[in-house]
Length: 338
Image (tube, rainbow, N blue to C red; front, side, top):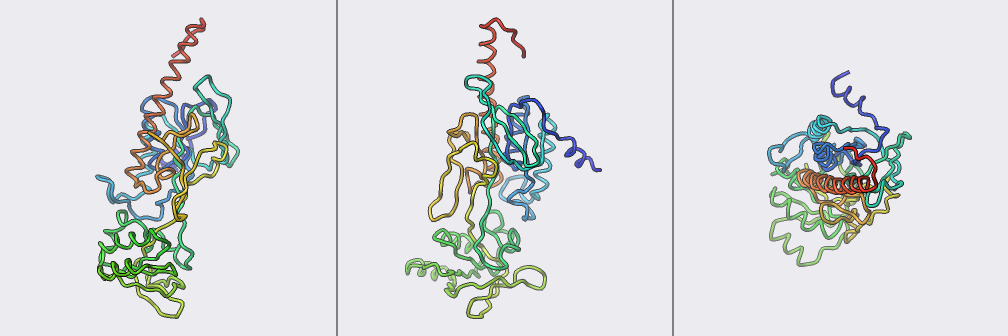
């Protein structure tokens, strides 16, 4: 067994109430945990092991770490959290419910994992990330994160100068195509039955973007396992090496219904995320949210920064609650412990 595997095996759920639990082990959850662990808080990260960017070979747009494989970033993040005494536990959260409070202004929460294990925490940081919903085009999903890309900043440089096909899913796809036009002179826009007005057609023509109105039937695989192009419903084959598509983005909500967190819908059915305020605060006392679960467009760096801010905010609230409890104990004549 490797050192890493041994570390995973020894990360168990504590039986005592912890200061904070991070639901989600991506950049936001790990950075939130790091901030709290470095403040000597007891912290547990619940990691489902299914990060959004798992199919990608590398992450980009994050200074110094540009080009690092996503799995490597997460592995280093877990080890840093462990270094300061935090725990990273792999599992799926089945339910999260408010529990009996530890005192006024000091809530408690009980988490139950899919395997029946339970954990009680004083504060919760929801960092579950999001789920991308691709258009229903046969053969598209198997190339996701490689030949099928969505973010010009995450993948754009790597697909520069390739023949790119932009698959429309709604109004947002128009601007999305213009961003990818910056990366290649060979861009085809497949409307997929979504109407384009004359002004948009004129703008596309001015940028030498070819518009194809014939519906896309399926994605055709190349001999090397990549994308050869798309087949249209009239039998025509359009050669493309890369397909760019905006996705519908939905915050992962599994196991969180008991918290009754408010959510926000984006226009045109483009997504749904948790509502949040300053530093990731929510309307539910004791619960914060950070990363793609509340900011659907956040890149890795922004998600990590949001997790750090939420972690610091949680620590500040815990410090106030600890002081209130110590003062109440002192005034009541009870012994005060550190």
